[in-house]
Length: 369
Image 1 (tube, rainbow, N blue to C red):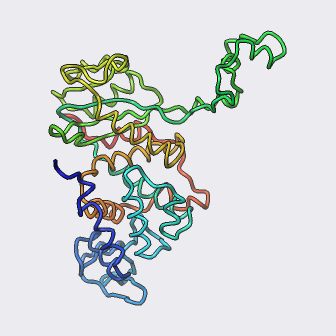
Image 2: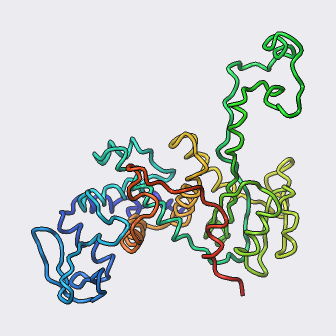
């Protein structure tokens, strides 16, 4: 039997190498991943790519052309940082090393940073993953499914079924049956019922790899509803021609035959048909998202749900990569990203306005040929 990739040396040994780095070596690694050279740098002000004057005591360079001073993180997602280079490496190691994510407090205890610092920097990493999600249309066999998040009313204090006369006892008379107040017949308070307005669905599209390899590439998008309008908006843009789509029996996927060969599995009867029709790859991605909700974050909010969805898209797409490859992908992305628009100054009150959805990605997706 072949060894699982998580049991290999490549999946764990890079953390030891990173924690043996000095501050100078960590800076050299970040600068080389940013500029592709250990001796030359690109000035953020004038763009001159050459060997600039080194100010070793301040860990900065002075541009040989325009005299602008800059560091390895100037103009990147870590712009105006207060962390050392080793602390940056440690934060990214904590983000990368857990298959189902890591809580802020656990990462705070591991790195020695405050929970606020961890939250802001983890948010910057997710922002980079949102803007860097591969939107190239999928092809081949594609599994699609939705998972509902957020908007869960609190359960009743009673574990048993509510007795028929419970509402009469509560209201002291015949319970009102006003259709405009459905929370009454449900035995909830109005405030608890209003939590349902935060309900969202994350629709995942998983491109199948070779036999036995699971999904090859995943996309995920937050929608208000799992209906045919949202499904078709995603399918027409992110599913290539001559693809084979597999889904469950939800009516939201009935129109899929207009753009691709469509097969369904009735989950009320079976998980997979005799012919092998299933959407297990999408269900697998859903389960990992749910495990993070139950065991790590203990709940999502609509505003940042897309950020977490893109995090788990990255975890799924890079699950077979070595730890070095995953770390270098994150570092390279952060060092080549622009300063954060959503998390720079977060704790000073500068927050992102609104949640992200399909509309955020429409203008960035390549058109189908």
